[in-house]
Image (tube, rainbow, N blue to C red; front, side, top):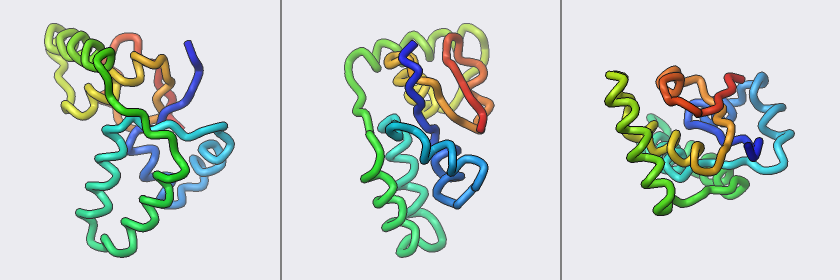
Amino acid sequence: MSGEIALDTSAAVRFLNGDIAIAARVLALPEIILPIVVVGELLFGAENSTRPLQNLPRYLEFLEACVAVPLGKETAVAYAQTRLMLKRKGRPIPMNDVWIAAQCLEHRWVLVTDDTDFDYVDGLVLEHW
């Protein structure tokens, strides 16, 4: 396992909202890794918020400090396998979460999240800060 930490949208939003419990841990990371789907979810959230003019610049500044990793063919393979496994278990999760899980599995990242949907993904290493 690479041991690198990736943030899910829930963890990134907590950080952006000033949650002290997560802020110190995120700031201690050598780099902040975001699956590209998380980047899209964060930008959508900022644009769709009741205060987009205040949120979007903060989110963009945060994103500049992060490593956003694009999707590739290997991610697509991991996505297909993960989605099939979840279907066979009868435990579908939101498609964006399948992509996030697939990218974490591909790169062997530990995913920091508050989202319990990820608990159903075999082989995915999770931490709840």
